[in-house]
Image 1 (cartoon, rainbow, N blue to C red):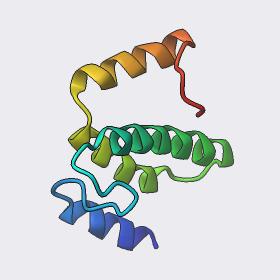
Image 2: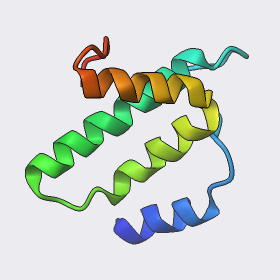
Image 3: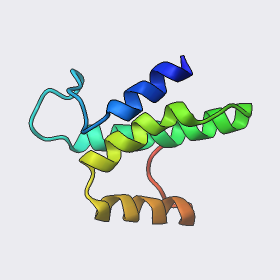
Length: 86
């Protein structure tokens, strides 16, 4: 399984089509992948497992989200004021 994930990461160019977000506005897709990445990191770190599978979510949100949003959300997480459930 890890080889499959690494192969997909090597071939990654930009966020693929996600049927959950069919519209042109990709704001929710950005938000969901940001949350999924941090949830994945938290869950796998707690289990003591390699967090490589989480990289998919990070690459997707990095390609969809404006950097200003990511910086704002990271700051909110650091301050403990982030509105999402991670």
